Length: 197
Image (cartoon, rainbow, N blue to C red; front, side, top):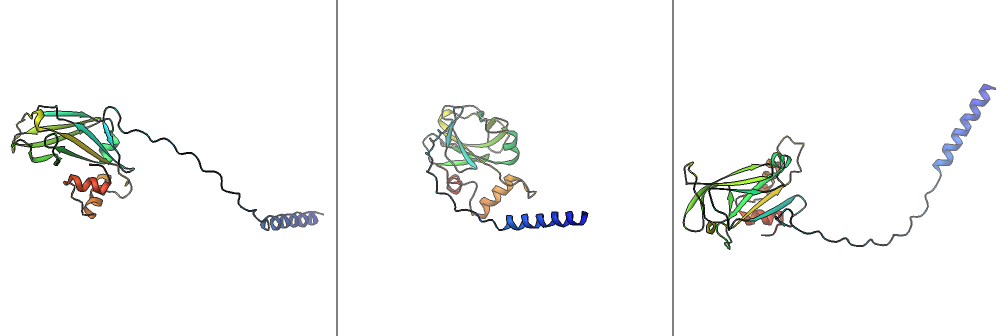
């Protein structure tokens, strides 16, 4: 009797496997209607003019034409500890309002647009970006006047590389170098990332 029950159970299992393996899928249903388009968002947050960029690169623009002194702080909430640790942060300073020339900062011997020169240092901290102006070749602070400054553009390129052992910053720098882009050339960097001037 036990043997018969085992054979009967085995036969049921074989028949159920055979029945399920022979089932055919039905036809695919018709395509549903297209959804409605969403509304575009707006650029800019926290008083900062945001510039359109690609998914991983953003430009933040600050008008410094009314600033003066030897250290100018800029509030930038997007500078989180994660961004500072991993992402490429590049600054470009316009020498005088209305000029089409942008110089990378920090810079050694920055022409201020009025015939003078400065060395420029940059400090980056959570939520802050400072620009410091020095007498060329010294550690002596120099005051700039509002007429000498234009816009400050800060480009943040998000790192997508977290596994190779290289820092994300170095990976992005290497990508730029491999593409023949001079990181000191403002227009070349903007073109590479597809950003507005």
